[in-house]
Amino acid sequence: MANELSSPGNRVDFYAAAEIPRSVRADLYDLAVIGAPVHRGRYPKTLTAWVKRQAGLLNRMPSAFFSVSLGILQDDPPVRADIARILMSFFRDTGWNPRWFRNFAGALAYSRYGWLKRRLLHWISLKAGRPTDLYRDHDYTDWSAVKDFAAEIDSNPRSAAPLTTAVPSDDSHDQECL
Ligand SMILES: Cc1cc2nc3c(=O)[nH]c(=O)nc-3n(C[C@H](O)[C@H](O)[C@H](O)COP(=O)(O)O)c2cc1C
Image (tube, rainbow, N blue to C red; front, side):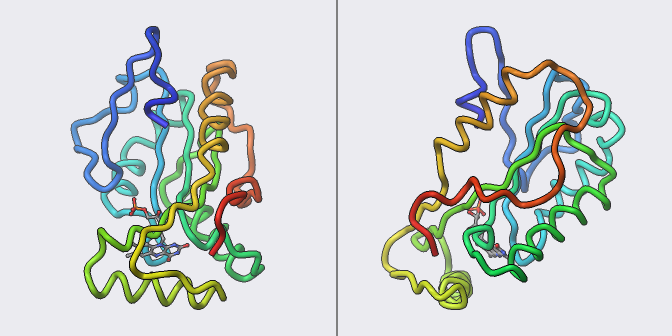
């Protein structure tokens, strides 16, 4: 996303969601694009706390949110409802209403996980009815949808008004599915 939004006219600063420094202020920027992975039914605490503190500023400027999860790959209505609930709770708890938001499928990066995480994620893939090979990584992100989202953000008028509603979209899982 940072790469997509970078251009000679756009300077992009990038911070990892789980480690965003307290000192970063949204109003130093013309646009804020925030992405976060769902981990055990929630977004990283550091990011949630930062968004809560900055919500007043974020609501007065153009801002976007993208959620990354594996549940979004499943056609199971309760799982999709759960992803919608996680998203809605995040917006409600932080008081932030981004102009744009989108759901993307993430990855199973088994090679980066310790024993416990590997088992947990493997169990999630089994639960989804699509067991995965533990000995390689799996990328489910539809990168063309990511590009499209970046283009949508970049080409729209820079207003702060929310455009979309917090319902998980079906547009992020064209690739390999769990
Ligand atoms: C410890 C852990 C817990 C996760 N919990 C969930 C979950 O509750 N629901 C879900 O849909 N995806 C879950 N996922 C999948 C992640 O959202 C997905 O793998 C994402 O790409 C992880 O991004 P990251 O590598 O930046 O952490 C979990 C992943 C990890 C590693």
